[in-house]
Amino acid sequence: LFSPVELAPRDPILGLNEAFNADTRANKVNLGVGVYCNEAGKVPLLRAVQAAEEARVAEHAARAYLPIDGLAPYDLAVQKLLFGADSALLDSGRLITAQALGGTGALKLGADFLYRLTDKRTVAISNPSWENHRALFEAAGYDVVNYTYFDPATNGLNLDGMLADLDALPEGSVVILHACCHNPTGVDLSLADWAKVIDVVGRRQLVPFLDIAYQGFGENLEDDAVAVRLFAESGLPFLVASSFSKSFSLYGERVGALTMVTASKEETAPVLSQLKRVIRTNYSNPPTHGAKVVAAVLTNPELYAQWEDELAEMRDRIRDMRAALVEKLRAAGVEQDVSFIQRQRGMFSFSGLSKDQVARLADEFGIYAVGSGRICVAALNTSNIDAVATAMAAVMKG
Ligand code: PLP
Ligand code: TYF
Image (cartoon, rainbow, N blue to C red; front, side):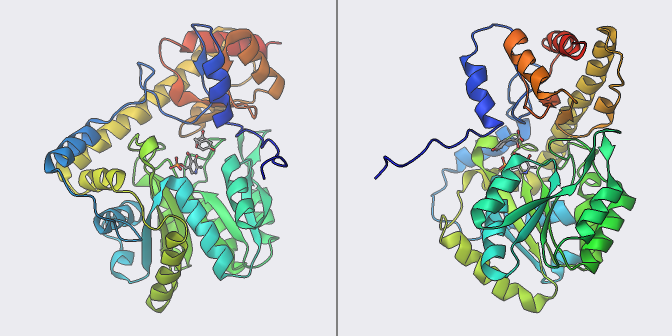
């Protein structure tokens, strides 16, 4: 039975953890996986989460099954966060939200749903993108193509290239769009850029699928949702995969959601019924704990305010680390322009390091980054940043 099975390639990001764990050097640093660590180098348990968990344990609640599409107060709280608490969409009958197993689970539900219920077979992802986008949609049966995104010459966005590529896609293609804090580049669209993208998407009848895994890590919760809100205003149908893994530091609880905005309220019941079928035939219904905790925080004004503060703390610390890294690289004698590190948003910096330079960082210094040159700025702290800047400068200078 199993003798013909060949070894699968490792995940290019999660695979790095194994190499890092096997490294015996005391001053090793893991800048690979996109996980926020605090100044002490630890994944934090947010105080708002702890308070909600304590209240939940004290309840000693029974564990019945959740509905197929998840906890209703959670789904509603997700919608408010995405579209705004006063959005007209909330009462429009055009929204469907299903609790999902993280943002990845939401993407997987969306991929399976679209493949099963539409006849188009092309998905476009940004070049570069999070590697799982390709893997998930290929596994669902899609042909995955790239659209132009990053411009290495400016370390910014190639908007014209992006619009031209979107314009050339077959009608009905699914387009995955990073709503904020693009992974891996940290390069985002402006309001005006989004308006142009929405124009092409509408004209070419593409299927927009927004991925928002870092809401709150760019500017703030509201501004980071601007793409979602502009698509909402456009009246187009679209999908959103959202995640609380990062914003609640609840990585292991798998808390996310798939939201679909239908074109009319008449579409909603059939779409929801088919989505439930996809869920039922995958895992039946989602787990309770993470969604209960997130819903408790999002529906309690005091806990919400505390969470917003803690999110701002994470965001500000990452910004401080960006500024410090730029300063220390310059101080270490790096002459090329590294100011883009401070303009990039979210957890990552697309550092411009080559594959060879990344390999040297690991071999010579015990500093692990993704082969693409992506580093997780959220893993820097005042104890490791000098070593990282010195090592980066050494490999950058040749
Ligand atoms: N989408 C992007 C772009 C991501 O970077 C991540 C990160 O983990 C996810 C989706 C999914 O996150 P999770 O499945 O951990 O909630
Ligand atoms: O890009 C990252 O590092 C995060 C975490 O297969 C991650 O999004 C990485 C790889 C993966 C799943 C999650």
